[in-house]
Length: 346
Image (tube, rainbow, N blue to C red; front, side):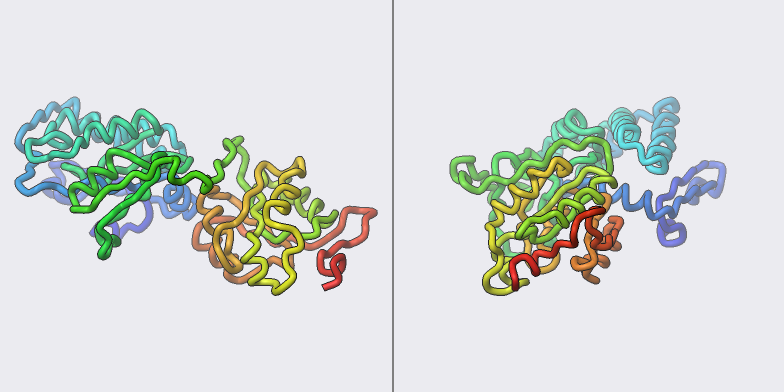
């Protein structure tokens, strides 16, 4: 209910002497869209297991005032870390919060009715990422903090499973949490070995440099000086990722006879420019064929030229907090204007 009255990110202070501790004495809220978009990017949600029947976290209590005071302090540290957009501090505050809950109510993660190794799953993510904590007692969802993709957090919520009876993952995506999720929801869990997936590798992303990430997309057929000039302008904004359209999509959008060069060749040519941090081939379709790659890269900026500007691209970026920039097609000083259409004649 408080969230309906105070939108955004809020910190609530409770005091037993104030209205019996039912309502907060003080509420501090932040409605900055940049904070909300940042939080959406770095919080990864992993379904683990539902609370089993008969579960009660209050069977063992250790109401040490020092621990309770420390628990309250972790809430303030968590809020401050979110407002300052500090991943390390946010992860540390979440880890400290769970440590307090383990000490105050040991049955939070360990209980005779709980068969899932909640503690082991949480420890795995805490040791490999800045921080992790459960949404509540006895399981539910695990929140993992990371600026990079987290294998295993694309777990399947029960309401989206439909009539599915099997959940298949590759070895790199195999996690104890996924297996426990399947066991608790009656799904068969299947891990596909590397040999079975040979020939279908997923491109690994280069390590981030700390700069803003900028993505551009396009055909980049008949590569010319205009493309290089575009890359020069965009590379001034941050690390440049170039996604070239795959052959079938270029044919779909531009018609027969396109592209002249294969997506492998176009990717190679674009990636050979020293300004480009990494080049990839799109895996989606339509004008947003690079959507899967955008979701993986998580760019700060999506740059297009006037020809590539599309309303759906603008709306897509607006909904995800990505800065959308449209650049004019201006040649390098002293060079003629170049367009692929004029070069190839159609």
